[in-house]
Length: 187
Image (cartoon, rainbow, N blue to C red):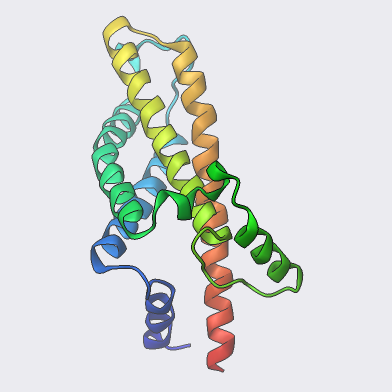
């Protein structure tokens, strides 16, 4: 397993993305991973007042606030490349490509990416989960830093983070499956 072959496989995974979107994807990926890791060292509960949270929690919060504009740019770039109809076909009741992709999966084959397909839909849901986690975290910060606590918003944020964590790991697993598939075709 050579380093150049690994790099070639990773480049193949991102071959269809414009350069700016590749860079944003990498930045958001690393940033979200950092947020997930830092959240494990926070000790913020419903009754924790803002003035007593630890430094890791503050880094997490400020990191999330800085991630918001970067994520909005990433979402803009993704929606510019793919339309809302491509990423959210279910809004108009269009399930035809998703059904076709599921049929392909039933044959134990990874489907190709198509507009309004499973991959585009999952990408759209991931962007919504990211946005939800960032908006709820921002709202919690605004209220908690001014009034001391915001238990309901903290609970909503923690729940919404579960969605982005699930997406993060599932998206990574799918990338790994595509990488393995590419690797096998190269052998």
